[in-house]
Each structure stands twice: as C-alpha cells, then as structure tokens.
Image (cartoon, rainbow, N blue to C red; front, side, top):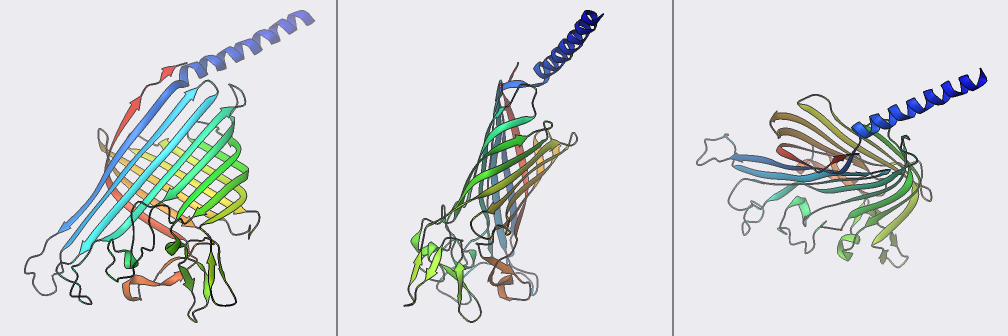
Length: 345
C-alpha cells in the first residue's frame, strides 16, 4: 500500500513537472525580439501680414527614435530599452527685440536620451526569480544655451548643458522578481550611481539664492567654495546605495499599450531619506497597422540637482532655480515595427 501510494505521488509529481515544462516550452520563445519605433511631432503656423491680435508665426518639429529588444536562451534573458526624444521650436520671425542684430533663433523644448539594459539568469527553469545586473544611462543630445536657445544669442560663451554634461550612469546588482510577462520588480542593495559633468565650464555653474549665496552645483556634481572665494568643483559625483526598478509593459487591448519604467535610488552615504526618481512612461494607441498615437512623459527628481522652477507669473514662466520634481511630456505620431527571430524552445 505504501509502495502504491509512493508510485502515485511520483506519477503526480512527474505529471505536474511535465505539464509545467510543456507549458513553458510552448510559451517561452528563444532568440531575439526587437521592436523599432519612429515618431514625429510637427507644428506649423504661418502668418503673413496678420491682422492686429492674430498672433505670430510658429514652427515646431520633434522626433522620437527608440527600440526595445529581448533575448531568451535557456535560463538567460537580456532586455534593452532605448529611447531618444528631441524637439525644437521657433516662435516669431525677423530679429529679436532686445538684440536687433540677431534673428529669432530656435529653442529646444525637449531633449532626452534614455537607456536601460538588464541581463538576468533564472534560479531555475520554473522560478520567477532572476539574478540580475541592471544598467541605466541618461543624458542629452545637443548643446543648450541660456533660455533654452540652440545658439548663444546672449553671448554667454558656453552652453548650460550638452552631451555628457550632465549625464547619469547607474549600475546595480540584485534580484529580479517576474511573476508574469508584464511585471518586473528589481531590488538591489548594491547600486553605483554617478552624476557626470565632463565640461569644466558647465561643471562650474552654480545655483544661488536671492542673497547670492551659493547653494550648490546646478547639475549635482561636487562643488566647494574656499575661504578665499575661489571654487573647487569635480566632474563626477560617485554614489553608493540601494535601488528599486519597477517595469510594467502590457498590450492592454488590441489598440492600447502601456510601458512604464520607474527607478528609485537612495544614497547610503549622503541623505538617504532623499530618494532619487527617474520615471519614464509611454502610452500608445494604435490607429492603423503599426501607426500609433503616443504620449511620452518623463518625471525626475534628484535632491542634488537644481532645476528651473516653473512660475506662470514670471517672465518666461521661470522663477530661478530650485530643488523640484521635473516633468516633461511629448505627444507623437509614431510608426512601430517588430522584428521577431524567435524559435520555440
């Protein structure tokens, strides 16, 4: 009787394992899957001899290029999520009122490079836990001058930002929990984060209060005022702490898809209660066969970084610099194409 019961248990366990393995082999694909996205944002208003109060000409052009790729091979998985968005606009024509020698220039209204790469190995074929390495990078594409102009109309002599000035590079080791194909929760007790400002002139830019007291570097790199009034700055701020990444990507319906990627970081060595946030969201509504209407949004916060404080009651809508949550948004008409080289396991 005991032997019979043991054989029945072995049979049930074997059947369960076989069923799980069959289900995995049917659903888990091996190889590469890559989705390429190209988006365009275009605005044009042309006014020639407009009536009084009718407005002025405006031209705006924005674009987005991105790809998401995934590789599966046995227990190994590798995900890469890359996106870059860029937009400029020109309001008015002719020459500047406060500088009649220079024509109205283009202004930048969005500029962002965003990359996340995750390599992971399952603890077993049936486990939902992965040993994971996580890499994150963020920066800008082109130079930006005062008042977000693409050219130095104020004769400042140096841009306020450009590629790798500033930039964020973060590397983390930890455990990833993936309960299904949509959710991923990554926890890392060992994360390295670096704020990079390679350009010395940009690294030397500071934020001050109303009395002129230096509050710190605009971009978060270490900055120190000496007793003689001179300043010492560094091009890197290397931090060690803990991080959490939450990823949700799902085709909610035939026409609606959501992709969200949230990163939280706490510095062990300096003010760990101030949590750095980097959150990217994308909502896609399919119009027709790969043609989509997309809403991109980026939300960031870093206590070490000073941002332009929005104030509709101030000239230009900006009231100095401060520590605030920063939010940007872009609406695009986008075309997406998927390359699938998978083979069922």
